[in-house]
Image (cartoon, rainbow, N blue to C red; front, side):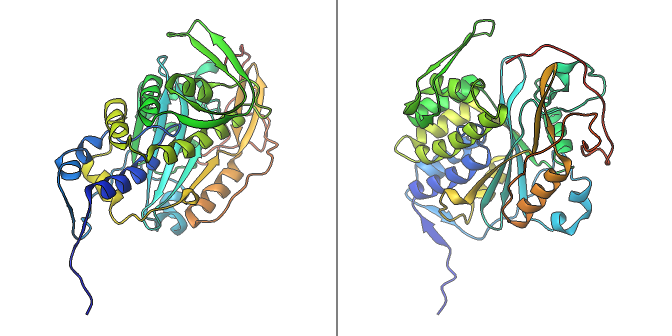
Amino acid sequence: MENNEPTMASPKKTFAKFFVVTFIIVTILGVTGLGAYSYMLDSQLLHKDTVYHGATEEVSIGSLIPAEGMFATDPEFTNTNRVNILLLGTTREKLSDTMMLASYDRGTDEVDIISVPRDTYHEREGFDDNENRKINAAFAGDPVSAAQAVHEVLQGIPINYYAVVDYDGVAKIVDAIGGVEVDVPFDMNYEKHSENPPLIIHLKKGKQTLDGQDALGFIRYRKGYTDGDEGRVHAQQEFVKNAIKQSMGLNLPKVGKAVIENVDSDITPRVALSLAKGVTNKDESAIKTFTLPGNSVRLGLWFYFCDGEQTKEMLRSIYAGEDFKATESAITGPDDPNYYVWTGGGKIGTVANGSDSN
């Protein structure tokens, strides 16, 4: 006889499962999470002997930036069970130094993380200087503005929620994890005393466990990668996976507390809990990472120009659950006849000369 009774689970196991899913969904640089963790750290998950699991409760998923273009009209994209969350790692200068879109498939419990290089060229009305034509300037303290920019670069993709952490918060969460092991690809030495506090990076090549401050240096370091900012993005993605694996230890409650205190998100506790229900343990193959296809070009400043056609192909592959590998892009700038972004298919402006900066 089939048993349809609701099941019971230990609070430790339930908390771990919840943490894995939400941690992955809102990971920035592998160390951020939902601002809603206070809910799962309360007596319902940590101070009771059992946790009750009944039927899955339907909740209303938010819509920070609604779908447009193919995401609003094409059945390949409209018939989906995904939740898209914008992940921002920010600086004191109110720039989004790291931008990732985590697309969580509620049907398969798989996560696709799309990194958008901070130098991605993106025009905004009323902002004509070069610095403001980089997508990292769209944040300016407003996650909705950053979400709109990523929505446009990613062909009108809907964005349901955001999660924001600054670098001080990143360091605190890494320390709560107990450090993150990485393989530093080369010696990293860089100092920029004009920042507040000064950015000082001195790391030796090789496998090592980095504390919070050294982890910041690793994820922020840009010089020395043969493929420029794309190399830095790849290093950040590997950091994501390592941090997720290393967070699942005895320090888990401490990590959750650090996340509560250092991450700002508009996702609600009820939605966060709903996303975690029914999730089975997954290995790291359930997390796929992608980088916005395109090419770096120096036009006064370094800019990253997205390849619209390859971006569309990447998004179709993600929503279909298929593999995708970008080919080398030949896009050379906004005057390139092949350079298009999603604005109804129109070509956008030109770049003036400027000075380079880290």
